[in-house]
Image (cartoon, rainbow, N blue to C red; front, side):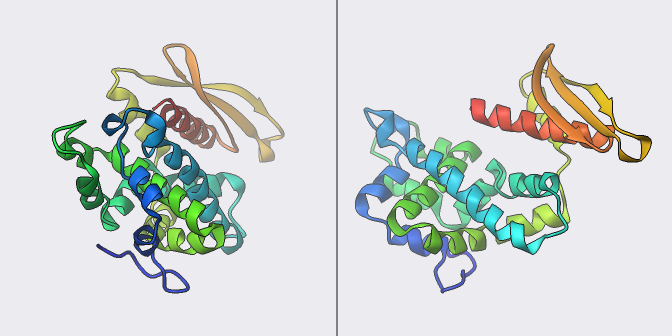
Length: 232
C-alpha cells in the first residue's frame, strides 16, 4: 500500500491502518449499502475520526503559531481537514484499493461510484482515523495523522481559502444564492467589530464576527460551510 510521509516514531497512518484489528478494519471500509444495518458501516467510526483529526491538527497548530488568533487557527484547521483534504489523504493511503477489497460481488453501490466520490473517500479517511484511535490511542495516532495531513496544513497556511467563494460554488450546485447582511457594528473607530450573517432564501445559514465587514463575512461563510457539511 502507498505510504504517506513518516511521522515521529516512524509510523505512518497507512502503517496504523495495516495494523487494525480485523473487525475494525472491516467496518472502516464497509459502505452502508453493503450491510443490513448502518451501524455496521464506516459511518460511526467517521463520526469519531472527525473529532480525533480535528484535535490532532489543533494540537499541532496551537503551540507552533502563537501569533495566530482563534479565528485564523480555525480557518487553517478547517481547510486542512476539509472533505477535499481528507479525500486526498485517502487516496495516498490506498483507500480506493482497500474499498475494492471489501466490496461484495454484485451487491450495493458499485465500487467505481464509491471510489470517485469525494464524500465517501473523506468519510472512510475519517473512519480509519477513528478506528486507529480506538486501537492505539491518541498519543500514537496523532503524530501519524499530522504527518499524513502535513501537505494540507502547509497549503492552508500558505494559500488560505476564500470561504465566500467556496460557499457560493457549493450553493450554486443547489441553485441557491447567499446574501450577506451586517447585523451590527460596535466599538470605537480604531477597534470596530462587525457581525455578519450569511442568508439563503431569507434563512440564516451562518454568523461571523470580524474587525472588518469582509472579515466578518468570511467567518459567516465558514460557519455556513460547516452547517452544510453537517447536513450531509
